[in-house]
Image (cartoon, rainbow, N blue to C red; front, top):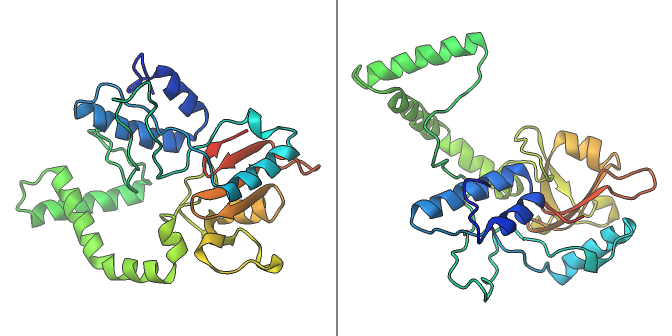
Length: 255
């Protein structure tokens, strides 16, 4: 946050940082840095907006379990949505909706931890790539060659997987539980359980990792309800009396 906060925007950035996950905050800051490099001096974080009536009803119900009232909770930011700029600051640029992948503008090196045997295999492969490029290629050019070859080899399989698993593709093959960035052992979770009449429509399904699905939701430690992908209310850390310790709208902390 210190990289992008300026005196006119400092309080807004602090308030936003306190209500979002580290992963999302990092992506937003990276995009804000990019806008500043384009000449924008002051960049605000995404402004909060009111949730839909259906989502607000679920939030009110979750907050009631915590003994909170709706008036005590600030508005929440829905991903991919921009609110109007306040009239008092009409010239401040907005942070646009983030793409699925964001290039880290300030990064010059990439560190990847590998086991010793895998490290040797990668080194041999990079040397082969260097030979294929005429023996004078840089390490980054060798890596780019490997990535392009990987994409060319697996593009058909990737397209097939996207067709066969549209929910996972929509959610970027990543767990949607607040704060989780896991990308392995993904499950398609029905927000309204099938045993309770929930259907297979996309809005009733969200991607969660096996741990959060089995040990969280189905173990009664997490409740997830609402409309996917941008209107899910998460009740986390549910105590034995049914009261959650935290409530999120998507990955934005509400209470």
